[in-house]
Length: 433
Image (cartoon, rainbow, N blue to C red; front, side, top):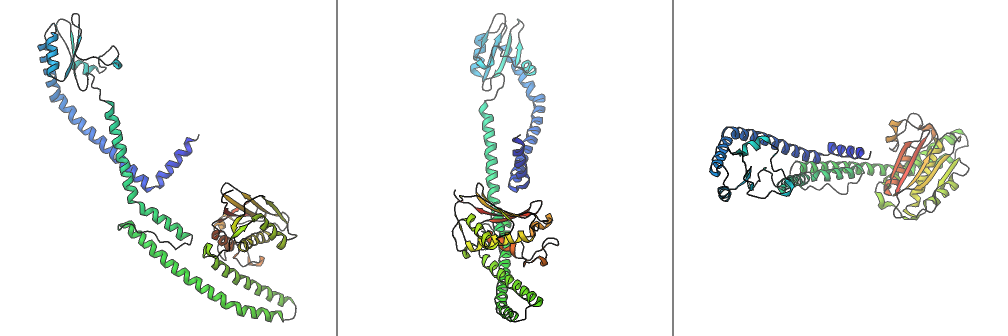
């Protein structure tokens, strides 16, 4: 049962690996060339054997048989063996003689199983003696030394290894391009793709680097513009809020203050997301007990809410930025409460350690979202038509900020359907236990 998954993995690797397919192509080409060559030369030699060589050998063996005589003369047979690279075996009623001892592995029957070969290499005298001839270096049954086969196999393996090494060297820029594309996808433009070659792959690496440089320049301009606008909006927004506080109390005043508060949160979240885009450099890291931090956030900001905690105790403190992790926990719980089941079932907050990670999961029991929306939930300002509407509050940056916090700490944010509800999992590297 364990062999099927392995075969599937190798089949998948072969189908999706250009390097593996090229080596397989070389092997098939070598095998096909060998088969065609062997078949063609075999046909040529078989025709030559039938028409030319076999009659010559038959006539020559007849002459040797006549020279040995009847009854066979052992001295003449020995003289032939000394003169020529042949082996002779004589069996009959009067003479039993062998020019070379028979190896033990042949047993007591030295006759070849090939009846056609036996008939060609054997002669019978008129007095009932049988003479069997063989080539001394290949023995009478034409057995090749075993080391020739092993040497041939080793040569084929060596050629295959050389082909693989050559293909790997040729395609090494593809590994660099793939690693560079993964860095660019994660937003890391600090290290360009090495341009090791001056062929098509080297040109492709240069073009990808140029594209990444253009994207980085465009993103930097967008971020600069966003930061400038956010900073410029803070002052008039503060003045507008102060003026709104002076209005007479009523529904219009509350609605205005609510809208101004939403705008303030939006600007603050935008500024924070741009700070986090710089990665780990913006963090204020210190050893943090994540379970204690989660409990503190729930007790101070969500007291009296329907929240069920399942936090593993005794976890090793992690190097975290407490303020950013607190922001993440607050956003996840607030999001789960707003889109949950209205208090019918509590929001579940769990913390546990796996083999290599620490996982903090927040799950609600609400309607959830459709599967096609999962991949985009953590995008800025993205909302679904059903469960994520503006009437329910929020500015559309909560999950995006959580993803930024996770990435800046070297982790990730996983979102999946819990049926019912939605589960968001923060995965952080655990480090040594």
